[in-house]
Length: 242
Image 1 (cartoon, rainbow, N blue to C red):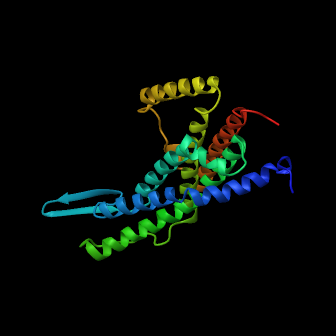
Image 2 (image 1 turned 180 degrees about the vertical axis):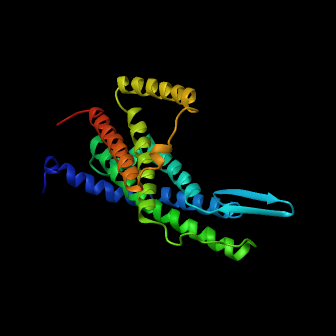
């Protein structure tokens, strides 16, 4: 019979990842529902539109891209990751011998795995939207690029990961020590105030013009920092140590 003290952190995390990946499937179902719902409801207008008129000539353009689906997936990742840290989800961790540190690491791995699946769902939703346009719309469809570039997919994956990491960090901050909660609240208030005051002067043009792979690496670096902070805060919140 194996002693409980011989169970390593790696073993616990592996069990939790398998358990959580199956347990949180409802989050993926929610994402699929949202993507299909918005994709079908907005298939006439797309992600954006523009027009040109001169005399009796009036031309309207509808642009179909991953923008809308990416915004939905990023919002979904943030909400889902935050919910993973709530009491309702933490009760499920009692089914496996675990600690807050192992739980945070497992949540990080699940979020990364789900982010990959979210990208696949995004692309599938876009193609379904285009099929709906071909079947039920009178618009002429001009395809600029049939297959989405891998670098674009990498950017989408990194953005979803980042929002998931921020949600996980925020959730763990409010489950951590009192000093962390106070600092998090102050940081959020200052951040919101600074954003409102300087939103007009913030320019992302230089960042957007960077190569997609560089943008992805920058975003993934920030996401990795958020994940690391979330795990560190979780480790500081342990009730007891062996």
